[in-house]
Amino acid sequence: MKTLIGIVSYGNLEFLELALRGIQETLTKQADILVVIARPDDTQMQAFLNERGIRYIQNHANIGFAGSINDIFEAAWVNGDYDNVIIMGNDVIPYPRALDSMIECAETTDWEWICASQFDSKALVERYPEVRQYFQGDGLVFTDFSARPWELHKDFHADNIEPDSLKDVRNLALFKRSVFEKIGYADVNFWPNGYFEDNDAARRANIAGVKSCGLSHAAYFHFWSRTIHQGEDRGHAKYFIRNMDYYKLKWGGAVGSESASPVTSLKIPSREGEEQTINYWRQK
Image (cartoon, rainbow, N blue to C red; front, top):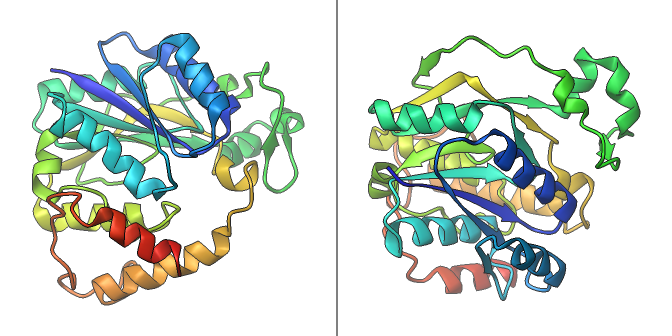
C-alpha cells in the first residue's frame, strides 16, 4: 500500500522543520511527503524544500486551509495512485511508532479513518512544570528550536484500537481512499482558516458510514495553533465566527445540535466552482 503524508503550512518554517525532522526520526515504513505552501509569497519555505528535495505545491493565491487540503487529496487520489493519505499539522511532532502504527493499522484492518492521540504543549507544561521555561506567556510561545522538551513525555498508552472514534481530523490522521470516495473534498466555504472544516468533515464521514477508529498508542506532540500564537494576525476571531455561522447554516445548528441532514450535498465530488466560492468569501 502507498501512503502520502500531506502537510499544509502557512508560514512558521521553524515549526515545519521540526515536523519534517519528526517524520524522518520516527517513520520506518515507506511513505512520501507533500507540503502545500499556503502562503503565496513564501519564497523562504520554497527554497528550504527545494534544498532538501521535498515535494511541494506552491499556492499562487490564498485558497485557504480547506483548499490546500484539497490540493493534497487531488495529488494523492486524482493525479496519484496512493492508497492512504496522512494529514499532519505543520506544528505537530510524531512520537515514536505513531506514523508506523497508523500505516500498519491501515494495512491490516478495514478501518478507513484512523486517528492518532494528541499530547499538546498545555498538557506538557502542566505535567512537567520544569519545561515551562521553554514556553512563554499564555500563548505558550516557543522560540528555542534547539531544545526538545516534548521528549520528556514517554508515558504512551498500551496498544489499543478505540472503535468509532473521530478524535483527530487534521492534526494527525490517516484516510484511506474509500473515505474520499464516500465524502469527497473538503468544503472551501470554511475560509481561510480551518475552523469548523474539521467538524464538517467528521460529520459527513459519520453520516456516510465511514469506519473510524483511534489509536491510543499513536501519539503526537502538538504545539497548539502556532499559526495563531506565533504567526501574523489574519483576523482569526472574525473567521472563527464566520465559519461557525456557515456551519450552523449548513447543518441546521451548532456543533452537537445539528439537524439530521445538511442543506447541501453530503459528498463534494469535484473542485468545480471552488475558485468562485473562495473569491466570494474573500470579498466578504
